[in-house]
Image (cartoon, rainbow, N blue to C red):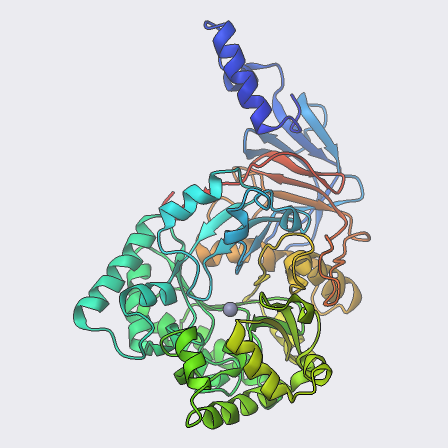
Length: 537
Ligand SMILES: [Zn+2]
C-alpha cells in the first residue's frame, strides 16, 4: 500500500471491506497493524532542516503524517523507501502571502499542481485585507474536492470594513467598530493565524492607524500576527517610509508580530530607500518590536490598473461611481492629472503589462504603451477607456535590483509568492504563480549568490512557521508533520516568464505533505493530502 494509492481508492476499498467483512478491522487499523515499522523512509539525502544550519546526512522515517525518527533507519521495514542520494531534503515550503484560496476551492485547481511543483506545502491565504470573512465556509469550500496543499487562513480587515462600513471614506461609528472587532475575534476563534490588512486599497485605505491597532489587538489576544500590504509602497500618499513606520506602530501598540508583506520600493521616486527601511526595522527590533517582512524574488509586482493609477477619492463607492466621475467633465481633468502622476510613479506606460482583461483579452500580455500606440491613443486616454469598461489586471515593472537584493539578505525576510492559481493558459499572469520558490533558489542562491541555500530555505520554512505560530511544521525534526521537499539543486528551476508564465517549475523530485507523497519523480501523484490548518490546534 504505497503512497500512490489515491484517497478515493482507499476510501472505496475501506467501504468495500467494511461491507463484506463486517468483523474485519478498518483499513487504517490494518495499515497501523501491518508488519512495516514505518510508512516511508527517505534515505541518503542531504538534510537542510530549515533552521539556517548547513546540510547534514541522515535518514528520515515517517509514520502516518509525522517524522518519527531521524538517523540511521536504512534497514527498517517500510512501505516505501525514497533514495534521496544527491538530493536536498528540506521542510516543505511555506508561502507567507498567497492569493491561491479561490483557485484551490475550484475542483479543477484544487490539486495545487503549480504550487506543489515548487515545493510549497502550506499557503497563507486572505492577504492584503481581502479574501473571505466566513472562515468556516471558506474551509468547507477548500476541502470539498480535496486539497493539494495545506492552507492557513488570515482574517482580512478590508473585507470586514467593506461589510460593516461599506465603501465610504469615513471613520466607523462606535457600534460599527464594535462589530469589526467582533468579526476579527470570530475569525481568530475559527482558526485564523492573524489579521491581514491592505490600507493601500479601498476601503482599507479609509482606516486610520488607530483603527488598525485596535483590530490588531483583537488578533493579539489569540496570539495572532498582523500582516499588511502597507499604505504606500511608493510616494502616493504618506510615502514608503511612513507606511513602514505604521506597521511598526501597529506591532508596538498592539503587541504582536507584524509583517511588512511583499516588501518593495515601488517606482523610481523611492528606489534606494531599502537602506533606510532596513535601518528603521532594525531600530524597531532593537527596541523590542517584533517586526518581519516577506518578499517575492521578482522585479515586477502585480495589481489592478485602477489601484495603480486611480486616486482613492475617485474610487469611493465602487466601480460604477468611478465611471460616473470619469464621465463628469468637471472631475475627469483632476482624475487624469493624478493618473498621470501615478503612471510616472510606476515608471511609465512601457512598464505596465496587462495580465487579464475580461472585456478584451487581446490586450493580455501587451504593455499599456503598445496597446495605446496600436489604437492611436495616448497611454492615459487608453487607461481611462479600459477602466471604464472593466478592471484590468496588470504586471508592473517597478523595482530596482539593489533594493530587492538588500531586502532579501535580511534575517527577518520570509519568502512569499503573492501569487494565485489560474487555469493553465488563462490570461498572462505574473510568473510568480508558477516559479517563486525555485526561482529564489536558482537565481539568488545559485546564480547571483545573494544569500546561501540554508538561509533561503530558512526564509521559506522555519521563519514563517515561527512568525505565524505554526509549531509542528516548517522544520525537519522528530515529531513534526511530514511536509517535505526533496530536490536536485542542479535541476531546480522556474520556467515561467513574463511573456509565457504558464509553465511549471522543474527539479522538485518529491514532495510529501502530511506524510503522503504528492510529487514523485517531478510529477504530481493523485494525492490530495492538504489540510486547512487551525491556529487554535
Ligand atoms: Zn498585496
